[in-house]
Length: 87
Image 1 (cartoon, rainbow, N blue to C red):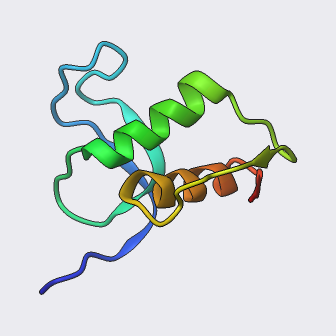
Image 2 (cartoon, rainbow, N blue to C red):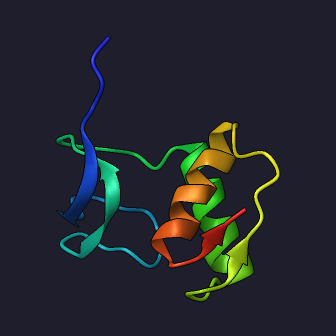
C-alpha cells in the first residue's frame, strides 16, 4: 500500500464549486502531497467543526473525547496547529 507524504504546502486551485474558492486561488495548510486531492468527509467535518463552530484561539484548551476516530484525530491536529492545548 502506498502512503502519501503529509506536510505543509501552498496550493493552486485548479477547479472548485465552493463559493469561497475560485480557479487560480492560492491556499495553504497541511495536506497529503499529491498532484490532486479532494477534501475527505472526516477532514471536512473536523475542519468545519473547529473553525466554523468553535473558533479556537491560541492558548485555549481543546477537549477531544474520541481522538482515536477518523474525525477526532484530525480535530486534534487542527486544534494543535491553531495553538490550542489538547486534552
